[in-house]
Image (cartoon, rainbow over all chains, first blue to last red; front, side, top):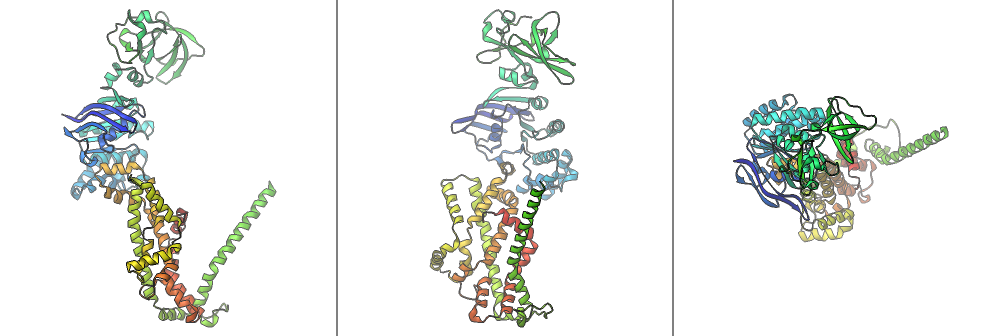
Length: 347
Length: 275
């Protein structure tokens, strides 16, 4: 039985459809990430699951029960908000216990849970501070503590790390993931950061324009992007999408229907070579430390190449590009869908 | 440059001396009241540095008029207005700030209109209403026209609107009902506004004179201001020492409160700049 299931869920505001006929299900204990660019409907979907936003069409099941019109409080879930949503007039302890107090949980139980949760998120020393006296990371921990103290089976997180600096974000990522696994929670996590999604998720649900573009494990999304959107969204730098005709590659890709396809190659799969391969011109280089992202040009098409070590390019230099056959992805030019039926020839 | 700087210095000193002058003018009656109240009657209009001090004037004033009753009346008036205002304004402001209902903008427009009308304009109308309700000459009648304060509604609505939606969302997820959201999130977060509004309301109604004068005519209902005016009226004979002593008695609580809450007072009036 899945913990959460959406069946044809839509959100319509007057003329605009923010979420369009979205269906997916998430198993118990899964860390699921709703990923997509801003405005793709991922936050709206999350708010519909939480009950803060009404569902215009479709139905929602939580733990197998119809929760389409249930009130947020009756859905047995907790939520972590982007700006933490801590109550400024309450101290850390009162913030964490807020929900238990509202639900009139016995004092003894409140105390026990508080002790346990404060330990889990490392807040024991800060219980009597006000949110204003905490750093961003500590506030995030309080928000987390408030979410897990109710011991709800489901926790929703709406871009919880977007206000933290890069280093702290990495630490919190690891902690949230560890906490989720220790408690066996089902988490739905909204983010626009694909690196965050790839590193944390059991399952990624990639959204675009209010629709689900692709769902699967991070490996599936990376290795077998279902559409050109998925291909271009996952990975830094994103996958190169090349029009074979414009590059003079048409004869080299396949024997049939050449002008209807785009090919996609990840920058890290391309190798710079002096002997054989496609002729290209190197334009510029972005040094990242461990490796360098080089911009190459084949006729008018820009292609990014990720190559180890440091490469310096002062003036356009000609070179050759190579890639293994198995790393070529083929997409339908008109629909943007992946097409695995085309046989790719080695260059 | 130097001339410019000197010119600026000159204009600043001119401004501050004007401010000192105005402050002096303002405080002069109070200084006079202090002088007259603490000295025997023969020194009331005569300045002599070592004139004997006395508290007799206060004792006489306290005996001559039922100040204790007036204090009680004013206290009942001010607290009842404030309590009802808090309840009504909170509820109205909450619905204006966070709910959609038909006629919302018209209703809010009416509230704003009330904000622009001086209550004194409505004295006759209000008197008719009170008379129809059979409330003439009661403390409730003094307070009733002010209880649904447009100013309070407006002020609280603006404050509620600044409270992030996320907090309300969080409270909903945690299981709060609408009442609990109001009570546990909005009201505590708007506390500075309640303090500001409370101070404005108390000082306004403590000092209010015209309407209580019109609507009351007995000792058991008169607030301090009206009692004091009757006490100091020429027909009861003008004895400056006793009148000033009575006046000081009347303003003392507010004066003490002002000195104690000076900062909040100034902030609240700045906060409530539209008053």
